[in-house]
Amino acid sequence: MFASLPDAAGPQVAVTVDGKTVAVPPGASVAAALLLAGAVPSRTTAVSAAPRAPYCMMGVCFECLVEIDGVAERQACMVTAAEGMRVRRTPRSSSIERS
Amino acid sequence: MSECYDFAIIGAGPAGMAAAITAAELGLRTAVLDEQEAPGGQIYRAIERVTQNHPRRLAILGDDYAAGLALVRAFRACSADYLPGSTVWQVEQPLGILYSARGKSRRLRSRRTLIATGAMERPMPLAGWTLPGVMTAGAAQIALKSAGAVPQGRVVLVGCGPLLLLLAWQLLQADVRVCAIVDTSTSGARRRAARHLPSALMAPGHVGKGLRYIRMLREAGIPMLNHVENVQLNGKERVQEVVVTHGGKDERLGADVVLLHQGLVPNANLGWALRCEHGWNEAQRCFVPRTDAWGLASLDEFQFAGDCAGIGGAHAAEQTGRLAALEAAHRLARIDRAERDARARAPLGALRRHRRIRPLLEALYRPGDRYVAPEQDDVIVCRCEEASAGDIRRTVALGCPGPNQMKAFVRCGMGPCQGRMCGLTVTELMAAARNVAPGDIGYYRIRPPIKPLALGELAALELE
Ligand code: FES
Image (cartoon, rainbow over all chains, first blue to last red):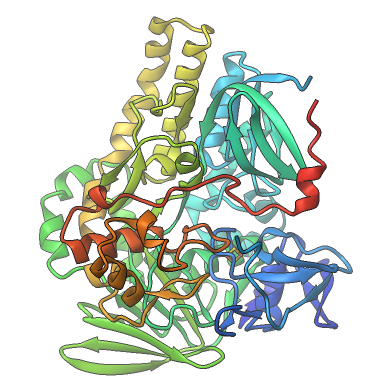
């Protein structure tokens, strides 16, 4: 869905998305890694299993929830990709703490 | 006991950085908490890294972005304590500011607090706006600034506002030609905006820059569809097409990525959670916290600066940050009134100049009624709980006067985003359905924590 500009060449950070390795530039968020990897939809909704993907990239919409290093429902756009990070798209991600 | 700062600033965008520089200069013990890992806010996001390592990206993003480096450097050099990666989830006197950083909840005390949490994009509830591949224009800019990532395939821009044109221009510099810009601003906007032009021309550089972007996009042959009557986004697992109605006819544009934008609104949940008074700003079509010229809120120890106090743009934000810091220093008896006023002269003058552009922009890019309050009943309004425009209208028919009563019937605004994505839409929908002013409808009652917390984090909070 997104591609790196040629000048993004240089040292890269390798993360895995559902087991597949994706190289992203340092400073990229996990949500950016999802977009670069084409890992979209990145989740489905609890209410109707509708497909979703990162929407705002700045922490306000909560559409980018994925599992990162075993911790479920993290905001991918608020986490900087780090070497070796394991990202998993959760097939059915519920809302956080339904009250 | 945790130490007590004189002045805590939440947000390290232009307003927060400028406030910190001024406050530190005046000898206030100052702390700046910010969600991001580096200073700059969304507008100057990743500016240090981009300047140092990515000259092409810097050129693509343009001069206004590059200019942010000076402020970021001055901020880095000032004596304020900078706490990056810190998400504030509650502010409560006398407990202080509760925030999480690196998986732990922490607390910071301050005598005065400045909220400088910036702006977010106004929700744009179109049919199909929840489809993957549909993002905000700002999201694409963030991907470009922080990851050097640009959208691929057929890219369509939908909405109105300077940021949409700027993004189209930036993408063009990056060799991404958008297929079309679909303009949803209200018809007659140009006529209504025209009377604000003389004043706008006094604002340094703004009008000329806008016209230059439009001319370059025209020369590049980017199609612009004006005066559209409706926009719908279709697709299954991802967005596939944009259906634009104009002149009573449907035009179908194939699309892989659709970027939406209809202006900015204050990123306001913290102010609401603190129960600061807000009022409806009709020109900006959003609620803004009630403040005086120094950013003083209705609650004495809090101030607002920058776009979270009403959209004014980065340059204005910087000036309001300075003014807020001067007032804080005055209230903390660090400077007297005469010194405050003398030091305020320059920022006040600059603020006045930069604000001259706003009436023109607000009239020219006023979002159309149907894009802030969808007419079709099945359009999703609350992305988290999938409540629709029809759901909201039904609660009005049941007699609900405002958003908080509505919540008794529909799970709208109760998901993890805490109404950030639906709050203004709900206010506008209920106002239209009841035929009253949005200000009389009001907004959701926001309760802390304003960001969801992992349970373990709370347990780790050290309360001495
Ligand atoms: S994409 Fe909106 S919160 Fe992450």
